[in-house]
Image 1 (tube, helix red, strand yellow):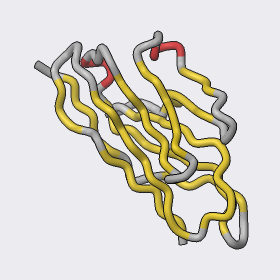
Image 2 (cartoon, helix red, strand yellow; image 1 turned 90 degrees about the vertical axis):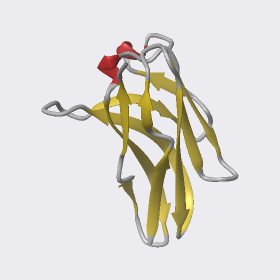
Image 3 (tube, one colour; image 1 turned 45 degrees about the vertical axis):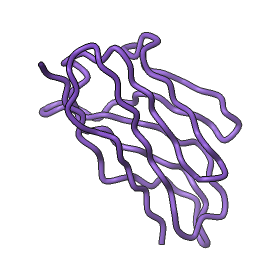
Image 4 (spheres, one colour; image 1 turned 120 degrees about the horizontal axis):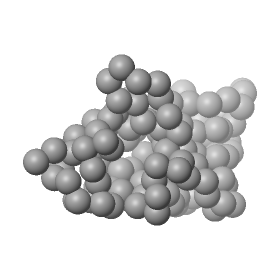
Length: 119
């Protein structure tokens, strides 16, 4: 059994910052790429940022240098530091992990954490 647990969401004013965390636990043999997605009401789920096991990163264009993804392999945890937030960043943020458990390699998703940017 594998679980991804996200934390760090909440309400923040425009221009503010939040740091999201996603911890993977359970029967993990190997953890490969980890990524963050977001989904606003009525919209599709979009990739925000991704990081490989070796630390290479990829960002969506709308991030524009405001967000930073990082990971702690010893803790099986990925982070998303979000700065200069705007109301357009309001969404549910989901963590995804490409990992090998005892039996199979596949993607796992977290339950999502709400980020609301509003004054």
